[in-house]
Image (cartoon, rainbow, N blue to C red; front, side, top):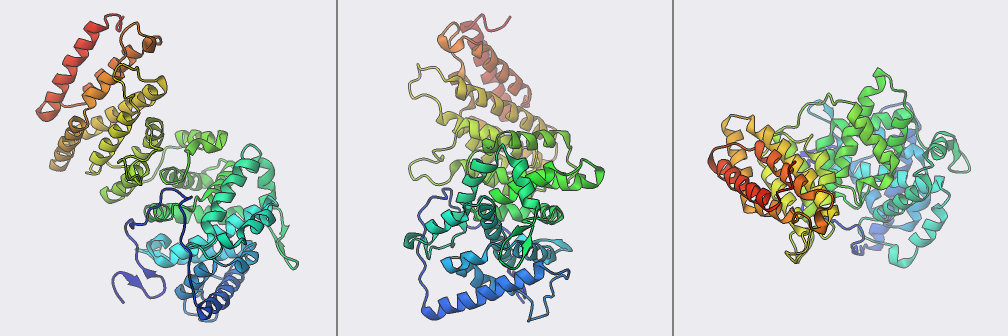
Length: 487
């Protein structure tokens, strides 16, 4: 056995791949198979679904050495290929398959703990879990037939990646349409037995299964972030919404606190990857962030390797995929400020990738500056920029407290990034002339105060000292030009 493969679970995946597709609407390739291959996918895929159902409907754990019941890696590969065919779709309304997948994910270990996202097998198993959960969601909303009629159109068949991206996008829309704001009613539907076929009824979810799955993902959250980034078109909306509802209806007792904290960590990381704005769920997103403020995490700080993965997710979200610009068209100071509030509490201050975080964030702020230097910067741009400067201040305060060699080099590189990206000019661009229409609400005072607060966090020697001296002089000049800024 190779050090990079496992006899049951296949290839080990420890880093991002190069297939990050930012826009889920990107056209997908058609797949082409021989008749023999298609027959094999149908036969083996159907058998894999049956074995997952049996495992989910039983009280036993997976037996990796039983060839009559084990869902092998090759079977999962066939099943994932089978998801490109419409004949599979009618087999997806099966909550027992979800439970079978959860059992398999829990049994995949590495270094003595669950780590399903370390292996190719876990990727495939989780993709099937998401696909089935998404389809069951459409079943609960009674819109699965409408979705099916669209899915079986020739243009939507035999696409690379199967039906998962299309169904994931549709379910995100269904959640927005039916469940956001009416989640209590639909949560009852999740828990009551429903007739999935003519011969059995069962609830869509068991709360304990969702808590177990959350624990698995949380324990393997480093590799889960890699999975999410490499499978961007799978929005995870159904899974996160379900888990959010379970958390919302879980009694606030000490025994459930690990589940709540685990979900908060998973949810926060996914915000860096998921399409759209994190605030799309309105009060429910606000509820999660409020719970996060009330629960001080007991998790260990991220190591440098894990910090790099989180920062990479942030920078990719803002910079990937435009041939004409280093920044994505959707990258704005508002989005950067929203995401950075989730990033900085996660990352360690010994991570050299902090420099790339600083660079891309400042580029993002410059991006929304008006082309005409005489045109005032809109308040909707200034406000998130002030939030970002506050984040920078906190970050440099942390860096300044480190006295070892690594800390000094990271701090020096971070200061160089500030200089290269012209943070001094950025502050100057944000300050409107005193008495101008852009300063009706005291914007000049707010920006200059933010600059002084930021400078307080920088050292007074080396490159940082030179930058402080220059920006302090400019701040004095701004005060002379705007004598009413301070009272």
